[in-house]
Amino acid sequence: MPSLCLATLGTRGMSEIAEKKPAKPVVLTCAQPTGRLHLGNYLGAVLNWGRMQDDYDCYFGIVDQHAITVPHVPAQLRDNTYSCLAQYVACGLDPARSHLFAQSHVIGHTELAWILGCLCPLGQLERMTQFKDKAKKQQSVDAGLLFYPVLMAADILLYNAELVPVGDDQRQHLELARDLAEKFNHRYSETFKVPSPFISKVGSRIMSLQDPTAKMSKSDPNQSSTVYVTDRPEEIRKKLMSAVTDSGSEVRPGDDKPGVTNLLAILSACTGRDVPTLTAEFAGKGYGDFKKAVADAVVATLDPVRLRYDELIKDREALNAIFKAGAEKAQATAFRTLSKVNRKVGFVERPR
Ligand code: TRP
Image (cartoon, rainbow, N blue to C red; front, side, top):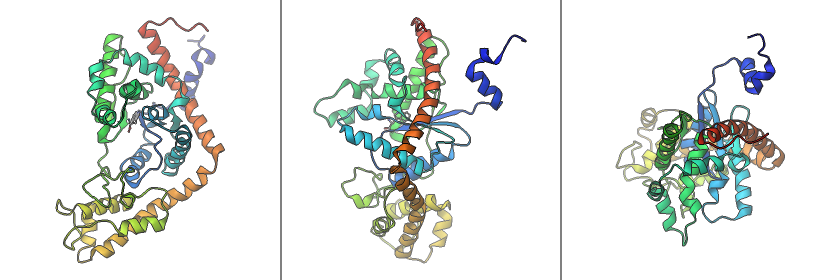
């Protein structure tokens, strides 16, 4: 094809020629800018996302548009969005390898959500357990809360994500995203990859330090239950040394030992050593020694995170630059999907 010049290939063709690498599968996950990340978020989620960055083309979204589906304070939302970005980067999400972006910076999430919403039975949204739970807690419910899972489906499909790391509580929402992808493909033509949930086993259930039968949570009224990634070493030690343990004095996992089991899971996730090895190591030692070892391991794990966060959060310019780079990349992908989708749906091509 002698007449095919670089100009006709466009930028996509150029970058493919430059890289000559097969495209990596896309991983996407998003989180609401809800303030502080805790040890459960870190060990159960963010750490694992970080480990995917070399093998996948990773998109990490901070979903501020989702955050306004429940009552919120605007200034807090803005601060939390910056703080979230700083925490994610401090936790190892790397803007040089991955695309970190704010949902509202990318045109396409709400546009695609509208189109998907026109394929989505109302009853399926009304049956979502998270919708019902959240609706119960509010005096009046806005349409946005009902539409939340459709927006989430759009977040995923806009980037043709193959794998979506999510917590168990998001399984039902992901199922909807799969349904909508299949429906669109069936009604129009093959367009979207059908995304799979990626639910990691390691560290995925870090429990409250005061009630090890409940998940560690930011909204726990007893704040000594929850270690935050930005806690100072003294706070971390205090919380871990006062963690609830179980009757007996043996350090071993078991259904009768939810407190010790949780601390072993934390120690294992922080040190990379497995639970049987740790159990053998603590044979004959008491809870005191054990808890001190857990506290040391958590401090060693989180201290670099906190130090990096403290630096970043002061540097709005750096944070804005990360958002800008992430939005540019995300927008390019989003526009590509959106123009394809608009054409298939039957919208007239936008006059240039
Ligand atoms: N609903 C998710 C949560 O609260 C956040 C979310 C929004 C998300 N869009 C997403 C997660 C897309 C994964 C993929 O945790």
